[in-house]
Length: 315
Image (cartoon, rainbow, N blue to C red):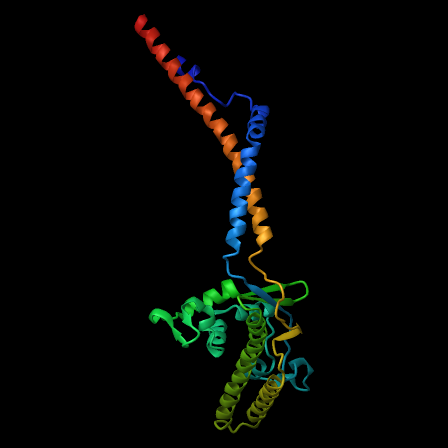
């Protein structure tokens, strides 16, 4: 049950929100709001001159469709029942439904990123603040960490964007030097095609080596025929992979050195800081009014409590 004290408790829930009071407070302080916002925006604009300039280069790509390199589908053979399970697995290469997602995942993988960084000696580029370019040594006995370097490269330097509707890709490389950014973008695509091609050739070589070993173990004519067909299919796969430079990615538009910087966007940052400052100032003024109302409600409540206690004592 509620007592009389609870019934007399002042509350702001029942108070109507007076928008006119808020608007009046904002208009009375409009010059202060503008002054504070302009000071913060001007300070931000000055600070942008001390930020390092970064340039962005972009490569436009298309994902190369997967195909069954070598071999013939079992249904098209004269005697499909002769194809063993092993032959089926070797010849009819599986084309995954998420093939394109798998290719992109490999592009973004730590394995390829570290391979790319090591192959192109990019640790000084990643940790440029700790590198003495003149003496070609690390400063203060700095020891670069490959895992950290791969993370920095993926987050701050190289970004991969995929449009699933048309399977087009863009590789964006951002760096302090426009020529280095363009070279890195083009080299990234070239090295990834080489990386995927070498994996396919390595897989074919391993299968051929395995088949040659098994061929020596069997005298059954049909099995030997099957092994020869398998070896032929893997040789075709290896040959096509070896002569296909754009193995996984087709370059539609190579990267060129950017003329204009990508960041910092001085005007955009300044405008955003100005707008944010105005909004924050408005919320501060509204919050101050609400705080005053809460403080007044607390004082009124305390007065009512004291008056009720006095009335009880008087009785």
